[in-house]
Image (cartoon, rainbow, N blue to C red; front, side):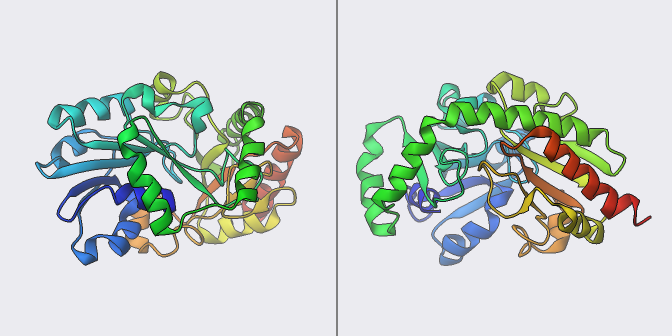
Length: 310
């Protein structure tokens, strides 16, 4: 969070920021209650929302594409076009954690600042907590250098070594994540225990054309709606034998989370359901294991949790 916090601290009291809906809790804690910022939280999948939210005092827009956990996409080039037409000085910040620079380069579409959680794919081994801010204008160097010290977001030399190690195999790992995840997504899409699969590389994804336009591949992140609610989803997680239940993602090992009870448990249920994070939604981070082992594990866990219970 040091990377995001340092970026938002580019703003001054009274500035307006437009964010995707995932940042509501974060900004409510650090900015809005202290009357530092005003904010609008929008669904960027409909850029008419962006047009409506822009104000004279807007100084930053911040989005993640794909989003966590529903893998919604932002048409980055179009979002930049709309924003810069309103005011060319508005900073556009993209969280590119799920895609990494290997599959998607937001700078190519006019984004000003890119942030990454290096803990995820770029490091790739579940053994580092670190973030990064990437800029394409040296005028921001002094700010981020100062903020790193003030915020205390200073990684250890060993953590830096581990991330450097991870970067050396990023291109190899991302290809395997993509290959495995596409196979799992296609399998789950046809499974009788699954209601719906969201994976941008699938033609069935509602924003597949946007994905093809701005990315050259996809990571291992998949959102899956099971045919069931919390009881069935919990039983599915407990039945897994190869896959690990964990909140982290982007590592060599495949992990699974139940957002309703884990990452998004503090969000009021009514709002959570409204934005699509149901009690039966699971998020997968597909790793580098043998694909047959993964598919077999998902298959037996689904049958145990849903078919055998009915």
